[in-house]
Image 1 (cartoon, helix red, strand yellow):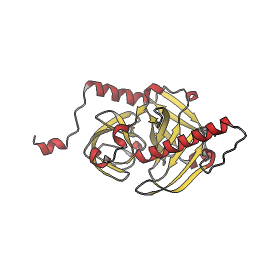
Image 2 (cartoon, rainbow, N blue to C red):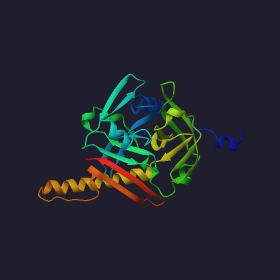
Image 3 (tube, helix red, strand yellow):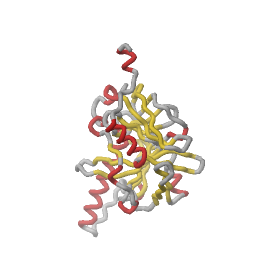
Image 4 (spheres, rainbow, N blue to C red):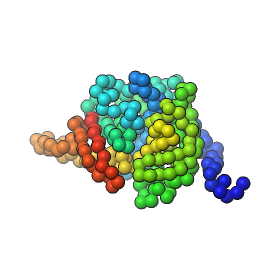
Length: 262
C-alpha cells in the first residue's frame, strides 16, 4: 500500500484504547427521546479556569432546548443498552446553557443526580483551544459513540475530512439517531465535537469557552451576594433569566439563551 492510501486509513487501536472505548460506550453516552425525536447525549467534564471541573450532560439543541423544558420537567436517559435508566429533573437551580448556532445544549449534572462522576468523558482541552485547530484536526483519526437505530450503543471509526469554522465534516458511519453523540480524538479518547446529521458535526471549543465564562461570572456574583446578603447585584447576566444576542465569538454572531441557575 502506498503512502497516499495509508493517509486515508484510520489509525490502529491498541488493547488499552479499545478497553477505554468499551467503558465509554457503557457509561458515558445515553439515548434521549423527545417525543418523535430520538438522539444521544453524553456525560462530560468541563475544565474551569481555576483547575476545577464541572460535570455536564451535552446533547444537540435540536433534541433538548428551551421549548422542551417549557413543556417538560424531566429528561429520561437510557444507558448501557437500555439496562439502566436515569432521570434528570429540571429545577431553577440547575445550570442549563443553550447555543442554537452551534446546535448544542449543556446541562449541569449535580451530586443528587446519582451519576458516577468517575465515568465522565474528558474534553480534548490540550488541543481544542489552540490557535491552529483546523490544521491539527483535519485528517485526524476520530470515533463517534452513539445509539444507532437498532437501539445498541455503537462506535464508528473514521477521519475528519475538513474543519470549517464550527463545522466538522467526517467519514464516520452514522444514522439519523446518531445526532448528539460525542466525536472523540482517537489518539487520546477525548471529546472534540458533537454529532449532527449527514456526516456533519460541530466543534465545541467556542461554546465551551462561552459556557465557562458565564459559569464563573455567575459564581463571582453568588460569592459577592453571599458575602453581603444586603447587596443585591442585578445584572443582565443573571442565569435565572439569561439571554444574549449578537455575542461575537471571533467568527460569527451567536444568538444564545440560557436558563437555570447555579
